Image (tube, rainbow, N blue to C red):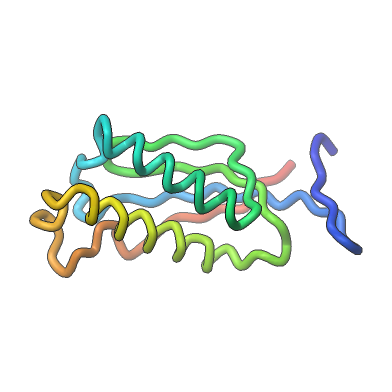
Amino acid sequence: MEYQRTSGHTVSRLIAHIVRATKYRYKVLEVDKNLRCRKIIRQICESEDVEILKGVVSSDHIHIHINYLPSLNLSNLVKKLKGRTSRKLQQEYPELKNNYLGRHFWSIVYGCWSTGT
């Protein structure tokens, strides 16, 4: 294998592809919001010991290709990504609050696929 993560008694190579879209697919992640969203995602992944292999922040959705440890619950990671990015972006850019009823920045559903060889 190209790259393996080891810890204690395990050797793993878990890779997932996560896709999140903004609610109503509004194109709000442009210029400075795009860069800030990217920075927040990097901070979250760094704190959770998740390696970002590839990632794209588009104007209305994000794609993240990650390598994570088996001890990490993937749904909890997605919940943290959703909650923290939404809260911080809406705090820093108050105009976003006007677009979303109930301050829900991301859509309810997300896509997550495990990838392998």
